[in-house]
Length: 272
Image 1 (cartoon, one colour):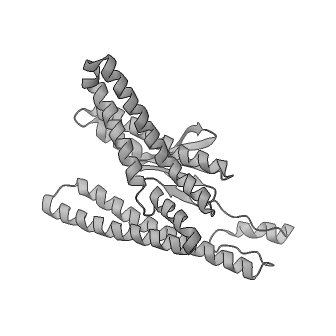
Image 2 (cartoon, helix red, strand yellow):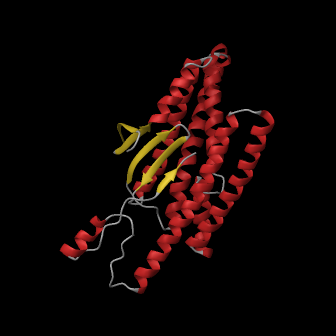
Image 3 (tube, one colour):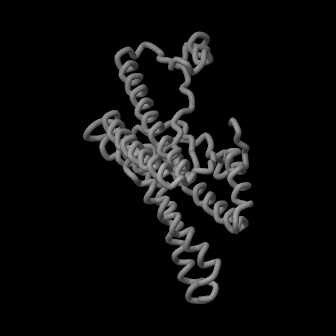
C-alpha cells in the first residue's frame, strides 16, 4: 500500500498505518505537554482500531472477509472484500463499530467510578482526566459515526432501513444527498470561520467536509454501477460482464478456461 507500513496482523487481518500518522505524532511531540498528547492520541487510535475490528469481525460472521485495516490521522478504514447487499447484514455490520465505542465508554465509566471510590485523589488527577477524556471521545465517536449520512456508519444504517421499501439504489441516493448537503453547509461555515478568525484549525474541518462530500458521491456512483451491472447480467445471463479499467487479467479465465471473470476487491468503508 502506498505510503503505508504494515504493523502486523490482528484477528487474521493485516494492519497498516499511514505515513501521515507519524507526521502527526512528531508535531504533537513538539507541542506543549507533548508526551501526554502523544499518549492520548495512541489511546484514541487503539479505540479506532477496536471500532474497525468491530466492523470487520461482524462482516466475517456474514462470510465477508476483510482485506486490511489502515489507520490514518483522521481515523481508520476497514476494506471489506465486498459490501453486503442484504439490509439486515449491512445494518449489523454498520452498528458494530459504534457499539464498540459505546462499550469502551461504559468500561471507562465503570473504571472511573471504581477509581473515584478507592482513590479519590487519583481520580482527581491526571489518570481521572485521561479516563474522562477517553470516555467523552468514545461517546463523541459513536454519535458522530451514527449521523445518517454517507460515509458514516449512520448512512449505512439509514440505507439498510430504507432499502426494503425503496430499493438499495434509491436508499443510497437519499443518504448520499444528505451527506453532501451537510458537507456543503459545514464547508461554508468553515470558510466563514477561517475568514473571520484566521484560525488554521478550521482548514482541517474544511478538508473533512470535502472528504465527506466526495465520499458520499463516490458511494452513490459505485452503487449505481453495481445496479447497472446487476441488471445487465440478469438481462443477458449467458454473458460474462467485466468492469472497464480493472485490467486485462480478468479476461484470462474467460478465454482460457471458460470461467467467470473474478471480481476485484472493492468496498472500502471509511471511518472519520
